[in-house]
Image 1 (cartoon, rainbow, N blue to C red):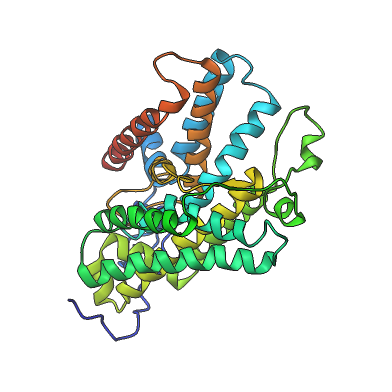
Image 2: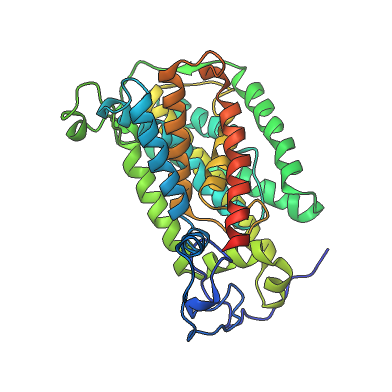
Length: 376
């Protein structure tokens, strides 16, 4: 087991811009581990516009995904019946809020060079804890605290197992995903928990935003959208403005070099796993507040969509790069594709088999991201 360096972090460990190690030398900034680069050379001088575009796409963690989202939305608006409506738009956004909240934690872990395949199970854990403590008029504060803190502890357990055993996080969380669902099945006896009550706390976390819905009959904008945007903005700020954020990028980019610079690699990974668990638990709160039901299989497959969103948003499966805003765009892209598939009613891509589209999205986005970085 490698020992953590005890010396304080070097002042050369600067906060990298969100997106990781794709900072071109002409930017006049420092790399993730503080290597000074030339700031006098022009960004692009006498180069074809195609190379400039590739450089911009490789350099920006969000430009490529955003252009892809706009293109897909435009194609759906042209070819998919009943797509270009506020009702359809609200459905896309509402469907993206739950996966988007999970994707924040998954993106943090991917930037740090790790995975968590148990987040879907932790969504169910958070949903059950929230449900059991609210359906009979219990304390909303206690319900939310348990729904967030218990999954955070279980996420931290993933980190502890990873640190102590050095087993890859993919294998660790693949195992704990089944363990968590199995324990949840035993504790809940596999029962579906639901309620017809409409407690005020449900409206706070995922109620209808009638201030927006009144402008479009049938629209279903919900308050979870506000929670998602707030969490994305907060996490982005933490990544690009705090020491913890710079350490996350450094650990995912070059863990050995980060350790040599005095970064406590184990602590960074442990905290990040706990944050991912907490966000998954909070997703369970949002989910139950909207549907007022939860079962053991709740959240199944959500980890795949979250990973796809992070990759589409510019994240690297090898770590050291990623964007919270880019992941949000990725979630919206996947939700747009899902809505388009459902409305088209394609016989060879039924709605229940949408995971195939998500898988293609992951592979395609990874190939595109790698090509842009090589050519940029």
